[in-house]
Length: 271
Image (tube, rainbow, N blue to C red; front, top):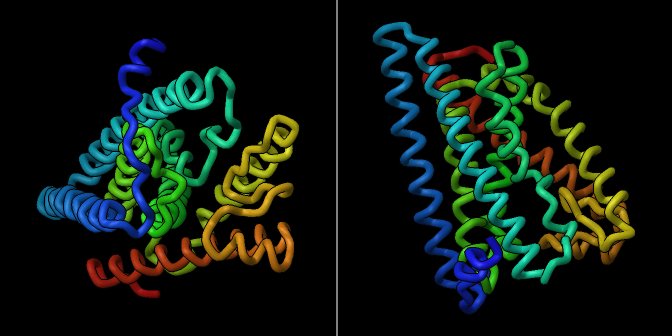
């Protein structure tokens, strides 16, 4: 295994944030994910209009989620092994623990295909559409966390977030999330709150081992995110973390509003 990992340890200059590679990757990557999701979603909606095959739509989306989940977990295993053996020379870096906001779709995509409760289905899809989709978009605004001097790690980070964009857009465009009303945004909040609590507990537990910074709300070290690191420097770590959480909530709400508008226009729902 280690031999294979070393064979894929290609090194290149770390891409520069807002450099040509970043901008081209963001534009064409997001465009490709959006066009693919729109095409898949349009085909599914057309089939349902023609034949009333809602079960077909749910079944197909379950397959998309399962395939995405498998791809994500296999690639995450590769990343974890690569970082352990190659990057950190046999030492585990808790900052790489897979529980960031954009890590959660890996688990959700493996869970969703087996969900039969419509209520739970809507809750989990609403969370993915509102928060995971937003998180993936924000990564392309500041990709410093995924750009590496190791080519495979950079590719992993880019493809990971494009997959999240794709499945989030498919879910939103096919109305799997509760976007019929603005208040549907609240359905994803319990999952978001539980995830924040889980991230905080991991950060506290990992502090003696170098820290983890899950969700970038580590109570011991300031955020490394643009803007929020300045807030933490001026007003303290706690203030930076609180503002960051509210920023995630605002970003999630904006995503929800976008799909709410789309759903109102496509099937004329009332507020």
